Length: 173
Image (cartoon, rainbow, N blue to C red):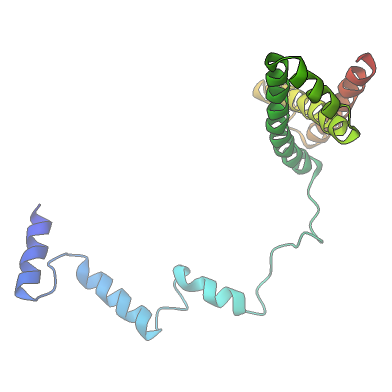
């Protein structure tokens, strides 16, 4: 409250506010405006970094190769999106079943097309991949599998397990 009264009083008197940081902020502002402080301050470093030819750049995607665990992590996120799209398809099937015979037959004719069959099996694979990745996280929660060799081995087991579970489902349906 005291600060508000002080600022209001200063505005009425046409003076600077009586904020203790006002002087410091004003001096820094003037230094930035004059260009004296600009090159050494971290907030202004973005302008200088981009133009410096001796500065190292971050690895480009064509040079840097993600480790297997990084690729698995990205794939886990992508399959999460596929699961959401698959749930929309599942809701559509349930609505067709509950809407009557005509809607059910139309839904069956749509699902008989090969592109939708591929999408369906992609959904099944995403489901099993998420399951295997969840088991992997449970192992991590228990404290297992943090060594570099274990990380890669579990990633391969996760991929193989999701493919095997999808194949078993494919051949049993």
